[in-house]
Length: 416
Image 1 (cartoon, helix red, strand yellow):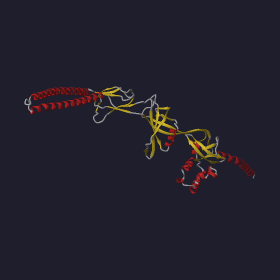
Image 2 (image 1 turned 90 degrees about the vertical axis):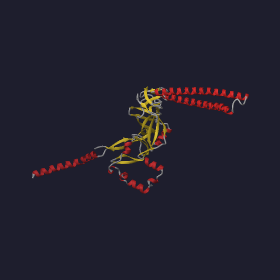
Image 3 (image 1 turned 180 degrees about the vertical axis):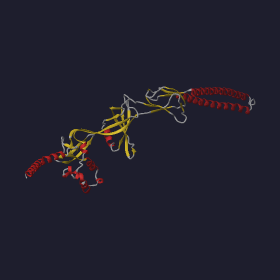
Image 4 (image 1 turned 135 degrees about the horizontal axis):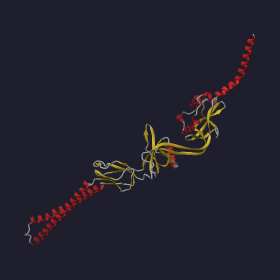
C-alpha cells in the first residue's frame, strides 16, 4: 500500500513538472521553428543604366597593295608590323624581262624614226623630179608626156602617204615604249599611304602571276595609332537607348581580354540602318571610334562594351534581390496578399480589365514598371506595390510606392 502511494506521488510530481514545462517548451519550439528572413534596406544613391554588347576591333581603313606585273620576288623590304611611309618600296619584282621589253621598244622607236627620215628623203627626191618635169613642160609640152607626168605626181602622193604612215608608226612605237617603261616601274611595289603592315602574303622568291587577277601582297592600315573602329551588334530592343545615348554624347567604355585591368574609352560614331537577322534576332551595327596611341588595341580583338544610356542621381534604390524574391509558401503571407500567389488577382484582371492586346502603349509601359516587394509584418509577409524606374546591376530606382529610405525588404529565407 505504501509503495502504491509513493508511485502515485511520483507520477503527480512528474505530471506537475511536465505541465509547468509545457508552455516554455512550446514557446521555445515555436521560436526555434519560426521562419527568419534575409533582408536588405532601401538606400539613396545614383543609378546608371548600361547596355552591354560585344564587338570586334578593326582599322578605320585597310589598303590592299597588289602587283600589276608578274615575276619572281627578288626583294622584300618589310615585315609584319613595320611602319612605312608613302612611297617606301615594299618589294621588287625581277625586272629583267621588263628591261628587255624597254630596250626592244626603244630600238623599234629608233627604227620607225629612221624610216621616217628615209621616206622624207625619197619624198624630197620625188618633189624635185616633179618640179623639174613642170619646168620642162613649161618650155615645151612635148618634152614629157602626160603619162610620164602622172608618174611623177603619184610618186609624190605615194611617198606623202608613206610619210604619214611612218609617223603614225612612231606614235605606236612610242606608246609601246611608254607601256614597257610603266611595266618596268611597276616592278617596284611602293606603299600607297603611311601606315603599318598588318598582313604580308608573300615570301622572298615567290613568283607572282598577275595575268588574270591582281594578287594581294600586303595590307596596310593607315592611322592605326590615331583612330580605330570598334564594331558592335546591338539588339533591336536596345537600339533606341543607343540612339538616345549618341544624341546626348554619353560615355562608352570597353575592355579587351589582352588588357583585362585597363578600361578604354570611345565615342559612338555611327549607328547603321542596315539590320542583320540571325536566328530571328535582329541586330544593328554600331560603330565606335577610339584612339590607340600605344597600339594596345590590335585588329581582330574582341571587346566587351558598356554603353551608358541613362542615369539619375540621389534617388531611392531597391536591391534587385528584393524584386526577384517571391514567397514559396502561401501560408507565410498575410491573407490580404495571398491573391498575388494563388492566381486569383490575375483572374480578376482577366475578368474586369482589358486584354493585353487592347492596352495602349502607355498602359503597357506602366504595367511593365509595376512590381511587388515584400516586408516582414509580424509573423507574416506583406506585399507592397511599387513603380520602378532605371535598373542597373544591383539596384533599381524606386519611382513610387509606400516605401522610404531605410525600410527593410525581404530578399530570401534563411536556413533554420
